[in-house]
Amino acid sequence: MSHLNYETRLPLGQATIEHFLGLPAHPTKCQATYVWIDGTGEQLRAKTRTITTKPTTISDYPVWNYDGSSTGQAEGINSDRYLKPVAVFSDPFLGGQNVLVMCETLDHEMKPTATNHRHKCAALMQQAAAHYPWFGMEQEYLIVDRDEHPLGWPKHGYPAPQGKYYCGVGADRVFGREVVETHYRACLHAGINIFGSNGEVTPGQWEFQIGTCEGIDMGDQLWMARYILHRVAEMFGVCISLDPKPRVTMGEWNGAGCHTNFSTIEMRKANGITAIFEAMKGLEKTHTEAMKVYDPCGGADNLRRLTGRHETSEADKFSWGIANRACSIRIPRQVADEAQGYLEDRRPSSNCDPYLVTGMIVKSILLNGHSSPSPKKTKLIVA
Image (cartoon, rainbow, N blue to C red; front, side, top):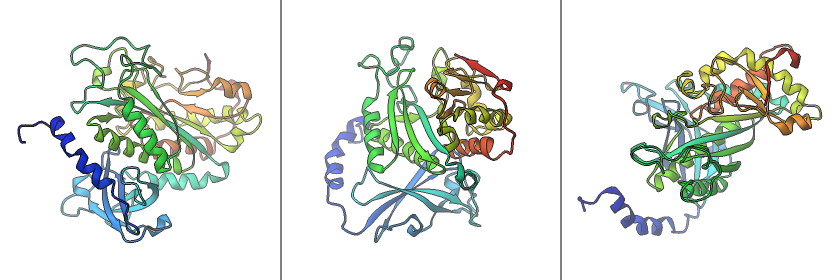
């Protein structure tokens, strides 16, 4: 069997896998898969343990440890790091009463690690709780082979120009729908608020939306939805790229973002458009700071995407407009017509940390202590 490649060997074990995963779930014991963000601030890690009786609250899940020197979060001479459970979801892979557990990472002094941005985000959300901040995040991604080549792209040359792929139907314009539909169903099983999915502008590129989520729940759900996506892709023998502008797409192809919808109770009320207009001053004030945290590379990844072309704004300029996808902040046409609703921050990259993004939005609009601006004094671009 050593001469067989991976693709040939994979199906031979499938019946065995299906047999054992098809066995009845254990009546009392629970397999808990702990999921965490590693030292890159972008990749996820996971490991599983048996818990004798499934806990009823998140605080009952035990703190666990891991080797931080193997995840870029510690040195070998002091490698132990801790996993603190913060959110739990039903496990769509193992079924039964088994669970996926989202965790914060803590160092040897039980303090947040460098890439644990949830801790600070939770504090910001608590400060803003009276405004009932709601979020929805639109996660774009590219399905690629294990050699990082986009699914459906010819190995030499390029596919037909973009235009027919967005929300497309047909084998010449849709690649990887099996992954997308499996992921959607798995998220529903897990209890994640997945709102929808669609094919995107670049061939092999897709999007799913998570929301509506209130406060810290947004980051927890998007990170777990990403974990499930990577796991589903693994089962199909492909990979997921969250790169905002992969090298192969540097030509006339749209990049990938994570557009973030936001509203407060004030924005959702009648004539809430006034509160939406007022939010622009705070967002403009923190634009430079936001651009530094809207991707894991301190803004470098977004510079490849936010060029002012391909439905993006320019990275060094703040703008907002109604129904304009070339702005930093878009107010949907329906929101403007109804004079209430939400705004869309189009700046975050596809590989952003949702804890940083949602925390920055709340800080910019609700916690910066800025005065309320007049809509006439801010830069408005109407489509």
